[in-house]
View 1 (cartoon, helix red, strand yellow):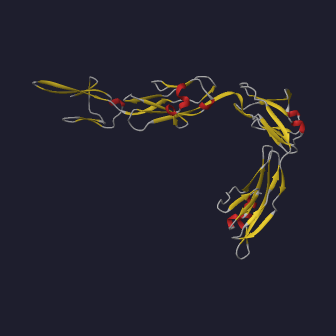
View 2: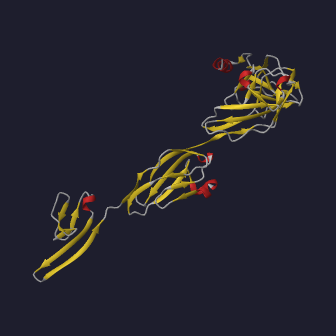
View 3: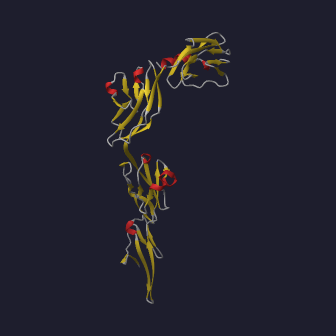
Length: 355
């Protein structure tokens, strides 16, 4: 005779009582419990006890939820799980990296026994994806993710103390800003007086917080400061930026519009310029491809390409650059085949695609 939880057990669709054993098919939660086997004859009886449990992998019952916090607040990510056996292990990841391996979070994080992740105080670098992974050693781990957004007052991240504007050209006074949410406005001072870009002709506010002067004059020289604001206020004002207006560099020698050379020959393309500070002259391809180092040399501003090949045709740019401005002029190099045909089909195709 068989008993389950002290109640007589009868055969069912999934339960068979055999001469020497009890067979249970399609195991489910209703079969969990204490079983008693009793063997009896006229001389007496004997019993044996057994227990049936259903073991399975850990599953997350309450996953973490997306959160938005203010810098300095405390964060609690809940991650509750159930399993049998119930020895659940929790692991937390930040953007795919286990938190225990992130040194800058080590002193600010704690994982409680129930799997809850504590993070305090929050920092803007904490923003991102948080993943909770649970396992009890059976089957594959279960995981769930949530995102943390950390809001903070607008702040200046980059504002060089010395900046140059090119006289007669466009120039930028750099005041790079970070904010969450995005900054709403920026106040400016020039020579310790309020400066309103919106009421100054030819001055444009850029998305990164900087100022664009569309045509620089000597009146734009001065000492500038910027202060960004969002809904949480500001983290402070930038350092003083000394903005100097200087003559931009200028070309003294420009390359011709077109150079046409036969394959396997050499070509020298001149380029030179002056300025204060002295400008640096460099060459590049307009299509972004690299110059062949083994066949290219530069002396002063002159570019020489030896053993011309068909892949050398294209548009080349001579860049004249110093702290005040960057100027670009260009030329086209055409390479003739041995038959005299100009190898320029792909170049013309490139030109068409980029118009």
